Length: 259
Image (tube, rainbow, N blue to C red; front, side, top):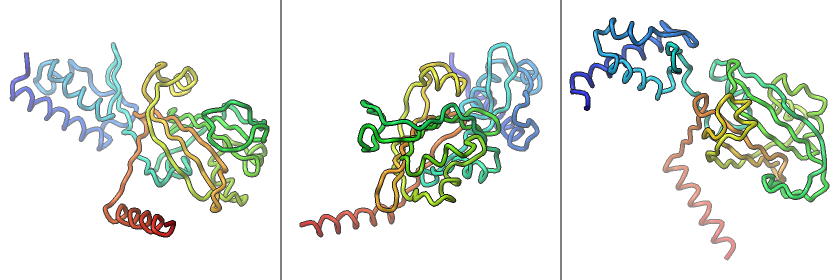
């Protein structure tokens, strides 16, 4: 049986009321909101109507629900611009939130064959620096960061406290020519390590961003694979017709010059 228009309007109104209460910090992040029975009494509504309202808030990322517990207010996923991927710490600070990190592995070793997930183009046997960290927003596990650096820039990380902050800021201050990044975004199921670190079930869909970072001369200095909890962070891509036209024009000019 479907809801009547009156019931549908009511659950929308209740969701709007609770959303305003959350956004005004009447219910701060991490706090519990009233139980279904309390809300049903407050709004003179059926439990089914209350569940619909709560389901709306859950789909928006505003609350978390679990069986036998009252809903808990949850922060909205942060949006990250595709043009601002170089420093997780800088991005989080710019949002007024607190970044964190925990190093899982850092090592310097020769590249082994085969490593199909590592499209750096370096010959086997070349030294690379491997780094895996768990990144946090306000102490909440948000992203598993796996980076591989060319030895010319990565070796300095062995003397850096990688739990202290942004490795990009550190490398740039030491003269690393980290100039341009190319990103590939897709979704993958969480593997066992992802699930453990991000506190999700194995197989949960998570957001994957793969990046090659090059010097101004085009030499690949880093390959990174970041895996995000989509309920904690997501990606915003912006483009304009003017930018697209400029890219088309540049492409045509390049094509013409090679004929």
